[in-house]
Length: 349
Image (cartoon, rainbow, N blue to C red; front, top):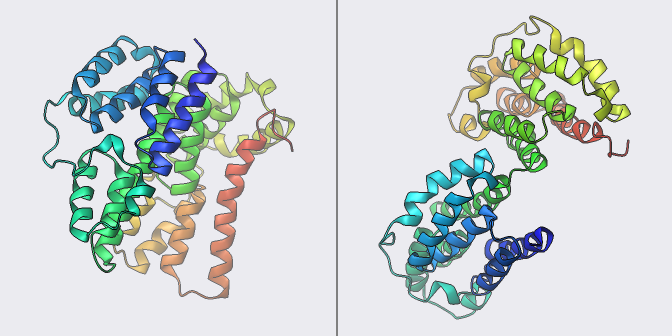
């Protein structure tokens, strides 16, 4: 067993599958990765996905059985992903549309140079989407029409996002605190998917229960969600592990402790539950500027600075003052994320 070499080969195969679309090159790499770490359930799961796309269903069934014998090597998130995907992987005839060319032979760059017709691309896109070959489906969508349409652009973006999500989920399936913590931070600070982060922060903590930076950020999230009893318990736990902070982390915690322990920190109620908010979904509701104004200050009070910035954008006439306010809010959001990194003892201050 060589876990490091297995991960290197797995990462290279993922790069070819998800980024470069060299679908004809990946099978030997995934198989070689598995040789170096035969019970790695994440590698087995992705190999099963690839073989499923290539219609090698007998081997897929054998791999599913092997994953079930090694569930302990999946994170909780990984167990949920596998449970959801299992019926798909075991379906005896999952595809309604035949692939016009063998899926295992496809290289996106070569395919794009063949001068295929719009109709041929349309057939490929539909078949690729069913097989979860989302980067191929996105290229097929782009080439299926003689001119760009708004609908095709939206569909292409969705397919590219599906491709990115499938790759990102693989990393989260490993039982690793840092991977889970980084992903939760990306959702909180980057995408404003506040409704998705709690399970990830909690699971990250499960794999590193004395990590005060994870404890601190989980406390911040629960403080935002007004779960003050649990926040107090987390603050007490942090104080038992101050030695795992950097000097900057100790200063930051000492500065923020009184805020976290305040029994009634918010003057303005949040119009909708903070823990249910997804910025993209919220932005699609077509709210009036008055509704956005109602959410702006409660969001800033709760340190949901990216939500507060969006509310400022949607509720004001854009002028110099509002532009400065929006920039300041986005900067606060960025600073909060950066501060977490500096709170780690290995970070350079």
